[in-house]
Length: 285
Ligand code: B12
Image (cartoon, rainbow, N blue to C red; front, side, top):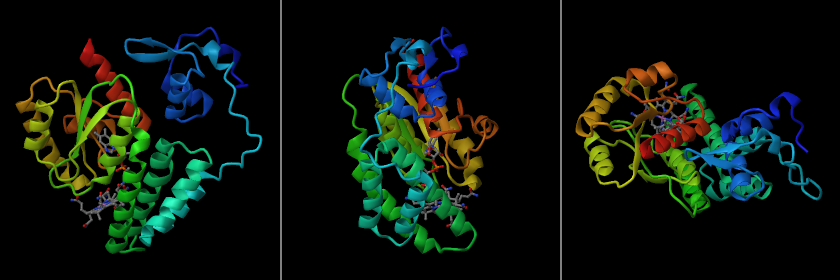
C-alpha cells in the first residue's frame, strides 16, 4: 500500500508527472499503470488525470521471489565500462540483465545509458580517455538504441508527429535518437533527422507532415548557439506559426532556450516529453 499524506486525498486531480514524483516512480511506469488499468485515470483535454484518492489503493508488485534490483548507478557504471572498450555483447548483457530485473526500457535510456555517456564526456574533457574511446562508445550506444527500438512501439491512438534533429554543424546524433524513442514510447510518431541537420531539411520534413506537433532541435555543443539562433529564425520564417523547441546538452536553462527562440524548456527527459504533450494538446484546441 502506498503511504500518502492525508493532505493529498480529496485534492485536485494530479497529472502523471505529479503522480510519478509523489510515488518516487518513473513517469513511464505510472503511464503503464494507467494504460494497463492498474491505476484509474481520466482524460482531461487529452491529458491523463488521476484522483489522489486512487493512489492509496495502488499496490507495488510483490517483491517475493524477485531478486532486489541492483543499484542503477552501479549498473550504469558497468555499462559505461563496456561502452568505452567497444564491447557490444557485454553492453547488451548489462542492459538485458537490467531489464530482466525490472528496469523499463525508458529507464535503460535515461538512467543507464545517458548517464554513462555523460560520464564518458566528462572523462574525455578531463583528458582521462581519448576521442577514439568516445567514438567506440558511441558506436556501441547506437547499436543498443537500435536493439531497444521495438520496446518503444506503442499501438493505439497517436498524439501526432514530432520532427527531431540536431542542428547544422552538430555531429551528435545519439541525443535525438534517445529522445525520439522516449517520445515514441509516449505515443508520438517521430521523424528523427539525426546529426547536422540544415534548416531546409527541418522545413521540408515538417511541411510534409499531417499532424505536426512541433519541431525539436537539439544542440549539444554550446559553441553553436549563435548559429542555432539563425537557424531557428530561418525555420520559423519558412513555417509561420510553427511550434518549436530547442533542447539538448548546450541548452541548460530556460534563459538559453528563450535566447535561441525556443517555445519552451524543460530540465529532464520526462519533462521534455510532457512539454511535447502539452504542445500536442494545444495543437488540437
Ligand atoms: C558521444 C559524444 C560525441 C560523439 C557523438 C556521436 C554521436 N553519434 O552522437 C562525437 C565523438 C562525434 C562527439 C564529437 C564532439 N563532441 Co561530443 N559528446 C559526446 C557525449 C559523450 C555524449 C552525447 C550523448 O549522446 N549524450 C547522451 C544524451 C542522451 O544526453 P543529452 O545530450 O543531455 O540529451 C538529453 C537531453 O539533452 C534531451 N534532449 C536531447 N535531444 C533533445 C531535443 C530537444 C528538442 C529537447 C527539448 C531535448 C533534447 O534529452 C536527452 C535525454 O536525456 C557528450 C557528453 C554529454 N554530456 O552528453 C559529449 C559532448 C556533448 N561533446 C562535446 C564536444 C566538445 C565535442 C566536440 C566539439 C569535440 C571535438 N573537439 O572534436 C565534437 C564535435 C561537436 C560538434 N560540432 O558537433 C562536449 C560539448 C561541450 C560542452 N562544454 O558542453 C560534451 C558535453 C563533452 C564534454 N563533457 O565536454 N561527441
